[in-house]
Image 1: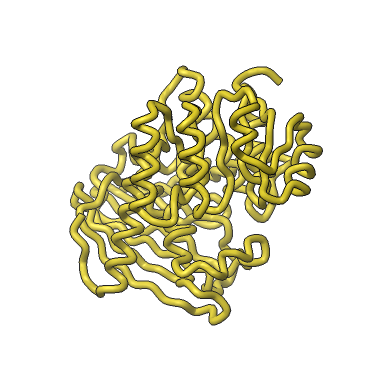
Image 2: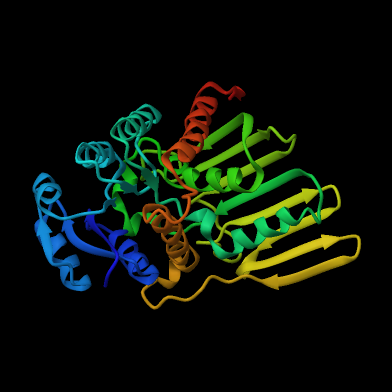
Length: 339
């Protein structure tokens, strides 16, 4: 495979899907992998024919001939790896959330700006096929101005089975899923000027919150309600789908079960399915999420290659992280936060 050469920093749960996504896109070759536990890096290297394995990230960055690095580790380590790559003038693609705190994420962005290197975020939810289709409907202006919307990621999926470390997070669902859903809200409806949030912990076996509700007052005048839950039992399990219902001046659009998109105007309702593409490497339980990795990485690669502009830059993602941070403040203080 030819193209840009990169290193995978991390060999955990998401690395398999990240690498599969890069290879699906084409134009990028993973030439080195690092993991704290070398055996895990070696296992990933065998699966993807990666020629170089390291358990010392400094040695990797000093000896591998790289065009960028892909950081696929826990958020607590993102800052360290970003700084090490920036010192070597290497562009960085980083897993979300960008950092465990807003202050550290802002510092990471500043470090990369000073070094003159891009910091891009592998924020894939906005790249889901049905969400892009819904955005296309809104962009036609067929429905007119949006006045209210609801974005839901509500299910009872056992997320802790695959990622047990999530049980130990003091801040869970807003950090882990809220970064996705609030980014989707920004992608679809623009920026907010205030918010109010409530959180709850239903699962007694975890430290953080597993339910959150965030009401956004958008600068456009619309009200957007974001509902997040890993504690909701519904007739049909909704994971991994994001549901959206939008009300506008001349009609509504709904993204609902099994990727059905329904557009209603005075002329009636038109419905069509917008399923994600199928990839043999994707876990069918995560189908729409894993499939969206490909389109996200295609966009990031176009920017890294100098052929396009990335949507999910650190600068853009900081706007989402500020919403997450404000949502925690709002829930803790029980008040509206002005942005």
